[in-house]
Length: 217
Image 1 (cartoon, helix red, strand yellow):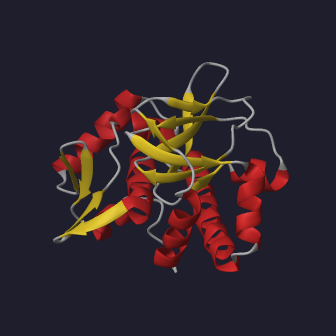
Image 2: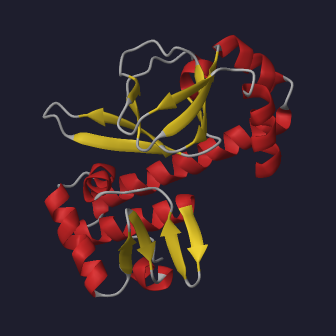
């Protein structure tokens, strides 16, 4: 299903002009009228907001084949979040009306798009539990497992999270300070559960990491 989905997106969006974004470049800001519907061809893009105190909270990380902002396209909801490239990213952009016509004639594409949205929604629900119930250690372990599930690639007996996550990135995902995240990551490294390969997090044991998370039940 996913290969078919990505192939259909390639066929539809290849007529659009590709847009290149550098790492850390804003795609559109909170309150902006989105310039169209985007499809991520390569790289990673994050959606985030700020508290009144200026604290950043990352809500979603998009990967290849993800489409945004869907709520604006389907419900005409205003965009209240910042969207920024985490890495160098290649995106396509078309008008909202073009995309709506496309999905109306492609039920399999609409199904896969809905499935992906539900996966992200489930991830947000899990993270809400962590923010309320978890301590610092279980929050960090849990978010690494969620990222491994969404972005992980097997490498021997390990799982590599194929999106570069700094300690600050992890902090904005779980609502903690970078310093606290660094302490908890160091604990996991000392236990031999995670390590870094360049800028990528490598999980050495999903089973053992799960035991220290809120996902152990």
